[in-house]
Image (cartoon, rainbow, N blue to C red; front, side, top):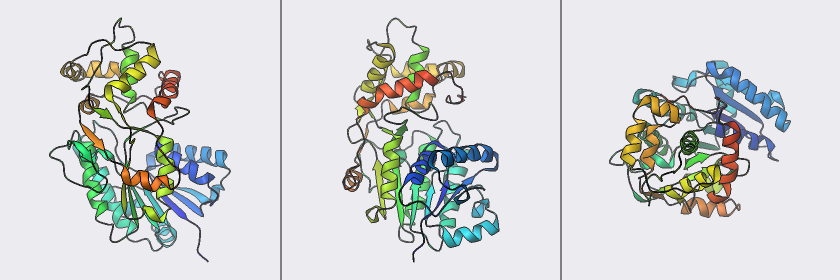
Length: 367
């Protein structure tokens, strides 16, 4: 008799891994066991999150274990006795651990995102009952390539907008090379935002920098528009990502493929900005602030910290890339999973932000 699924996660207690686990524990086919690899300094937070998940789902505590380790070490720094059991039993690996900060320095990004992934790849090769290795990349491995970007492509762009993109590209190249060796699914999400209906998120980064900017400048009598008028921004809610990933990581159709989990009907940057401004302050943008002026302002640490906005986010306001997600739409269509329209999500997104904007746990430490 085939044993049940045994899951191994990196990146817990991060936002997406937490959401994936919550949904996984609610499934009819309950996991046989779950292991979450956590840095020693994150153990307390991970344990607290584990308790929340157990309470929420009623899943047996002895089947969900937090183990300490570090993806930047060979063998992931896992205790040899624990490792022996993992090698025999783990069926599904979800590798989400990464540095996601757009302003991350190169050496840190390289160590975690590239070397860390190399170590996870080596570790995965030693699993005797592996049914699927799911790697979380990003649609933005495209770097500064523009035009239509396809799921089957993994092309080194002429340049990258930041070290996050560059190191995620390098890491995906390493994972992609494993497709002939192990059952693999590569996930390339767009920019992940909070839940489509509740607005709940864990950090005000990415698109939330726009909300921070508007909130800090709410005293202005006139709000100028920002960004190239034609550039689109690809935002996807975490609940769509979770449903899509859990389906694709278990369905036979998902094996050996790379998916753009992106919005097939994204809005332009100016449209997103206008929708958020209208929802937050009831205002409409008038005129336009030149992007070089905004970039110059965000180059000043004091202004950057006051506006709670990273300068790197402005690189996405003029970038003319469009993600083709035909394969994802086709395979997810079989399960009736679709990315919801962003316009319907703005009220919940803004409401959650306004309720929590002064809670420092949600705000990034802007350097």
